[in-house]
Amino acid sequence: MPSVIVSPVAGAAVGDYVQILKPRVMSLVVFTGIVGLAVAPGHLHPFLAAVAILCIAVGAGASGAINMWYDRDIDRVMRRTASRPLPAGRMLPGEALGFGCVLAVGSVAVMGIAVNWSAAALLALTIAFYVFVYTMWLKRRTPQNIVIGGAAGALPPLIGWAAVTGDVGWGAIALFAIIFFWTPPHFWALSLYKSDEYAAAGIPMLPVVAGARETKRQMLLYTLVLWPVTAAPWLLGLAGPVYAAGAGVLSLMFTLCAVRVWRDDSERSARQMFAFSLAYLFLIFALLLADHGVGGWR
Amino acid sequence: MAADSTNRPSDARMRVIRGRNRALLLVLVGLAVLFYALTFVRMGGH
Image (cartoon, rainbow over the protein chains, first blue to last red):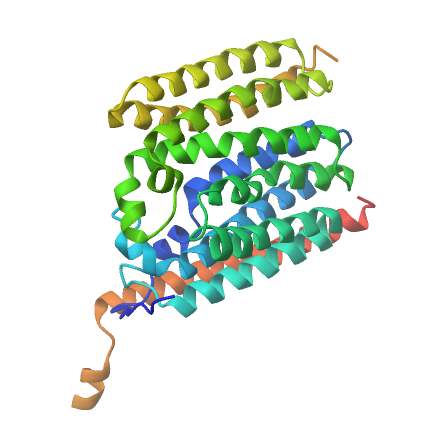
């Protein structure tokens, strides 16, 4: 990795430490973790549930910090990431790495001590997968980087589930699958209108390597796969018909977004699909949570 | 005394250091409360 010269003048501020935790990514991770915890069969003391969520949040933040440490050279090249604390020179690389490592070890240890060691092991796996498999191995080598690496982002509901049950059931795997198959069309929508930046940074995102047409084709296929995958919680008895109907409507809208992207060569449709993809995942999991809260289908 | 004044950190740096110290204090107090409460919950058989 090329060395990056940084010379923090005033040292990193608290806001910089918060920024390297990727709080926006963390919020979605935490939400899916909460849903995994809420829909799992069994009961967990509310305080321990809060500790589990805190550990998931801190573990996700740790992954983000270590990712920013490793990617500081390519973050300088891309406009989207150039203002981050490391490429902007507000934080030393060692500070970010040390901060990330302490948070990673701390979150796994507290999860193990406070909740259970199955959830702690899954949290450790999530952090390790994101750092070693996605960030260090796949991201700069293959256009399938976010497909395989997406597993890291899909694990939080399993952690939440395991915090309650101590193991991983089919329901948890269904939640994992929803995020796993949602990740490629979500990131490829972004990379369609940021492909110049990815190319300049040397990241082989699918639009850079295979072109926009092939990317759009695969995005459409993934949205179709999401139809049965999002129906799985209902088929497994984890959710009721209200969820099934809502998930069906949302998946239809997501597919229509992909069709628009397929037919439209402008950036606008890709931007809209990226924005909708965030709402899609949030609403799917919110529906699961609401359906479980109402509980009328049980 | 002149040497001291030239080595003094700038106001901007002092603000950053104060902010970090306060954040660290909050984190440490938070951890103490967390482990205190955790001990009670775990002792309660959960």
